[in-house]
Length: 363
Image 1: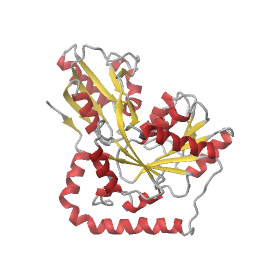
Image 2: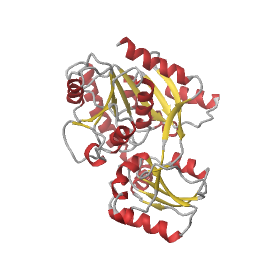
Image 3: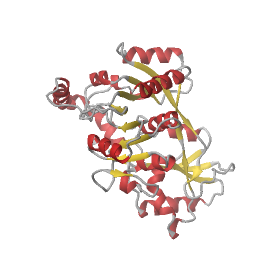
Image 4: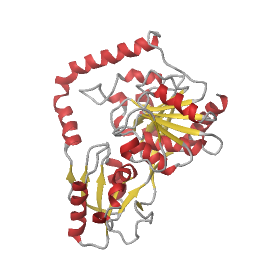
């Protein structure tokens, strides 16, 4: 098996492991700065703004992918029948500034790849981006006074706004309790920041999580009495062509994988269970694809001349690749997006749903 890697993220992880002890003093300084900032909010020297409308915050402590977008989509699916929903995020990597309300024609360059993905899936809900979350919520309410709930994406460290319900995500293989603050680790603030969460969801668990694994994770996290802890896993769907929507052919045996996401272990494991990965074009998270990238991918696909070969990517990457597929150069290049949904372990699903529904109804 052969992989073609963009080495940035991998080198950085190896670098952290090698020099962690040297970096710890810098982590202590960074941790102190964030602790002072959090204290200023706690003693109300800096004020957080709350709203009468229910706000559900979703975020993490760790830099990198913990499954925030699948969680956003899960909550949308849970609430959309009976509620008018809006989502608000920073719109990481977009080329625009200020508040922007997405339309069905919005691109990843305009609103960011993750909001673009959400808007393409849920055209009937309001999807907005704004670095200033307080201003963003005000503009959403002004745009649609009948909103029932706003989902705030990646808002855990955005202390100027106060969600009524805060959900903290942590990947099973990278629990925040085992990590260090930047730069020695990957935490944005000290792990005690988790105390601000009302709900902690351990994401990317093994689908068949054992009771012992569950108890061990619960022991490590040791949630406070007021916190609810749930366990979730990634549930992959059937890959579909990003230009035509058709499903991945049954005769596909081998694939070229294209990713520009923070963590790739789960998607590699999923694809390897069904196909042979003959090449992996791995880019950094939120990578802005160029024609040169597509030329390399296309040339690789053509050189194999294999009717059982397909190109697979993530839905997040598809939002950044789609604009090139309509061009003459790449119009015959079929790229398939592999959808992923968040699902909960056993009885966690009805219990999580109950907490979310009761919060929205009571507010």
